Length: 328
Image (cartoon, rainbow, N blue to C red; front, side, top):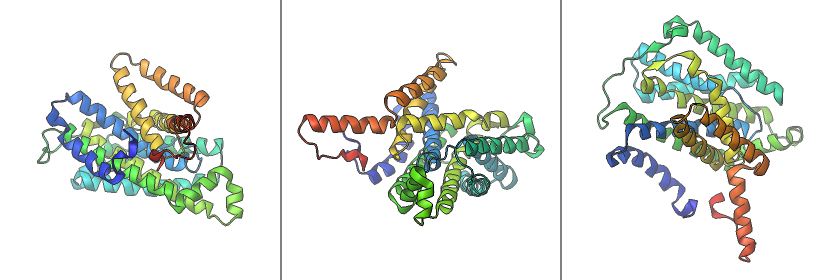
């Protein structure tokens, strides 16, 4: 079945509904946990790709935005007893402001200097949280969760639906950016920033907007974490692993399309979860092997590989002018 045999918007509506009714099929809670983690990485990889893929600015601060979103949600819950939708909205707003501020400080840097600056920003934010006693500091904090909302039996099932909605929203945002003037401007920045600026493209404004959108989505992905795990501590929440995984998923899937990070996240995150149950080191080997393979054999990722296969099939069948429908 071709990817676009079901209309995009119909799929966007059906996916949260499927996530709601999925537990009724008798699946073990572990598989629901795997689904939550995979969807969380779909959001992170998609958000990373808005700046790293479309604009070509490699960001290693994913963990910082994810952690800020988690702690913003925690503060809103502790201070105001805010419901989860308010926590997510507040985390996204703070993530957008943080992205805007970080962009103003770092986006004038290029290449490896920008990447190093994002790592430094992540370390500064983590150090601040480590010394913030209100949220537990370095020892972390245990969360007493309220009763599960009506319509759900467990928090795992509710948060699976929430993360599905966040994944769908992030994909819609990335798809809109890719096909809009913003996406065209970001691609111009990636291909030749100086030439784009000389042609009248407002490169700094576009990059700041991309930073804000990317930061908002990353922070939103972290907001459900306190209620999901019932415990939060800085070292795991601000882990560099989130940055590396988001980058790897975008590279493996393909950074030129909104579909690439989705495919990469599903492939790597699902294999990581199942491999980690067998051996803690095996999932690292899988990620490394996939990165090496795609960098050497398919630098355009899964999306580019599928495009090449489609073109080869078209040539073999004498249909050189047929464009793969899934591209759109």
